Amino acid sequence: MGFETFCRIFFPSIKYCFIVLFFMSLLSGCANAPPVSTANLCIIFEKQPEWYDYAKESEEKWGTPIPVFMAFIRQESNFRGDVRPPRRWFLGFIPLPRSSSAYGYGQIQDPAWEDYLSANGGWFKSRADMEDVLDFIGWYNHISARRLGISERNPEHLYLAYHEGHRGYQRGAWRRKPRLRRVAKRVAQQARKYGSQLGHCEDRFKCRKFYQFWPFCR
Image (cartoon, rainbow, N blue to C red):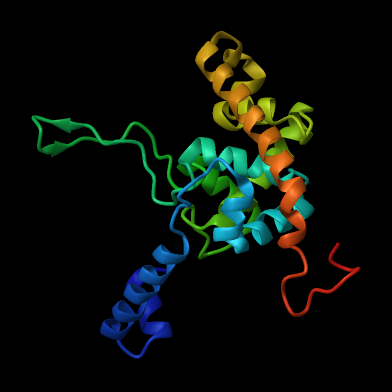
């Protein structure tokens, strides 16, 4: 469905469609502003409590623990939803293609995102939406566990498979990439740190909605 067709179906005029979508994008940008500090998961969730809900939902659906999700996001985008690889320029003013199609919170490339959409559906899912990206990471790690035998509680090797792709991980090229292995170890360390922090504050993010009450949301 093209953009113009979408507007004609759901809005009385294309002009009105543009106005509504413009203000929605402004509100979304405010809601998804990156945290000032990304070192402490409790502070992150205090600023964006819905991110806890999304991560918890994906944990229950796919099996990846919340701290692993958030360690991936910190490494890939530092919690910025509009990140792309830098663009190169020819002669200083002619734009050249980016080094990859990676985009969004999880720096997800086009082929992997298309596979996810094919498997899970969703016309309006976006790599710039935290809820969708957490679901993608959970789905991808679930496949890593099933195909490669990586524990969903092993963030180091989950990240290697995430970065290299499932076939790349199987080929073992990551063994000859010391920089990547250092990054994967850093992700694992961050996941452990986030896990320790979350253990001290998670109760604050449970049962905070009117329909959630003890003992069913503990």
